[in-house]
Image 1 (spheres, rainbow, N blue to C red):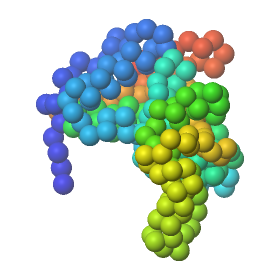
Image 2 (cartoon, helix red, strand yellow):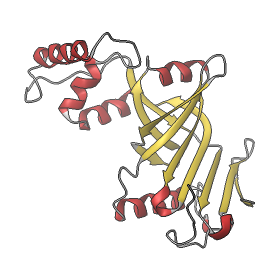
Image 3 (tube, rainbow, N blue to C red):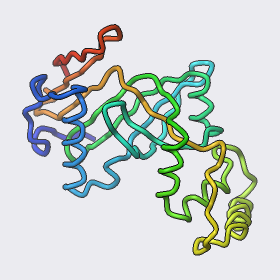
Length: 217
């Protein structure tokens, strides 16, 4: 299978494309907005990679729920595989694979848990069914059957009056947000004959200054 590039993205990516502070934020937000405007399915979906205590990597697709000058945020159960990995090795990478636009953005950097108040505010914005599901599931842990999972979900729903109930669903103690605080961000734009545009911005750990460079494809 082979696909040619260079027709969908618009071209013109270079170090001069990155402006503002931090250097990556403005272009990332514009590309994300392009994905929304073009009705790409779940444009905020990203592939997050973590490593466990032994250095074994794992990837999964999650949804980015916030972005600002501090980094990108996602939420999960702290006892999930990625939660346990981040407890042991608090670093991650994330890729936004906007293949329909012939674009990708890659983030790498340390990961921190966000403030509980920020998690609480996001939790309150979630659909009630999603709240109940998160409370019912011991994420990443084995379960005997689908029926047992549905029984767990039904028990939690009954406890709080179901999806149409009035009783607030509490934020689980072991559920919250993580922020990838990028030290490296790379933008990729597909080009003809595999001459893709790649621009990488790296943050100096001492000065905090970002530097942008073009990379060979």
